[in-house]
Amino acid sequence: MDLETEDSALQVLMDGDIDKVMSGLDRIIEAAPSYEKLFMRWQRQHWSTEDFDFTEDARQWNDPDLISDEERRFMLFGFSQFFLGEERVTVELLPFAMGAPSLEAQAFLTTQISDEAKHMVFFDRFYREVLGVEAADIGSMLDSQRIHVNKDWETLFDGILHDCAERLRLDPTDFPALVRGITVYMIVIEGTLALTGARFLIKSLKEREWLPGFTAGFTAVNRDESRHVGFGVKFLADAIKDDPANARIVEETLQECLPIASLVFVPSWVEDPYNFQTPFYHSSEIFEYAMKALSKKLAAMGLDPAMLAGEAA
Image: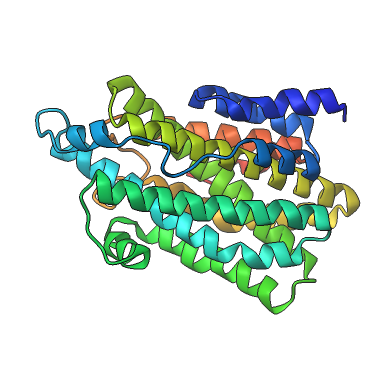
């Protein structure tokens, strides 16, 4: 791969526009930058959880004439799924780094552990300073917000993702387990769910000029996530080239996850989980975007996106 092409693709990760970051991810996937290039981009892209001013966010969140109870309820559902998700992926990633087959891949995955921890701390600060939630520590804060996540989130994060991490913890040399885990973590959770949900949330907030500090910080979070997804797509594309049997592992993992993953987007109070209206968009929009995003990643990995037919809602 031409190094200039890699650099050009990775440059989008410095952009502050979430749609440019999302569309730029396609270029990153196509360029398949090396683990070294991804590591260097991490070095150049540092940001701090203290970089963002939440003063206006707190004023807006507490203005009943600006944000309705219905809008606040739906946003709290989304915020909490992201917040608790950041904690889960931080904790579960270490066995993935232990099982990585090269030092270059291990080096990159250690940067991702740092990223995920930073994202968790960012959300903790947001909950305290904007949402006004008090807690003794991050663990207590997370426990207080668990009531907002749905059962399908629990199945995916506490069940499937945890099982992937446990298999690798018990045997870091289990390469098929690593292929399954990378598919769950970087392709399903980050590449299909997190980036899609973030794109809709950030666009909705920007259109209304709400929560500017959070919007800027959450965009930085998702520039990190785009880099992580780039790693996952490259890793799986290489694994499939090395041994076509790994393609079947990816397919089986998607068959396991997608019927559950699509329901992570669904608030517990809606009547029809496959057809509902949020205060900001219709469910069909986010489902369609998520599947298109996943199809692009599968194509870049050398797989036929047609396999998705019938797998998700």
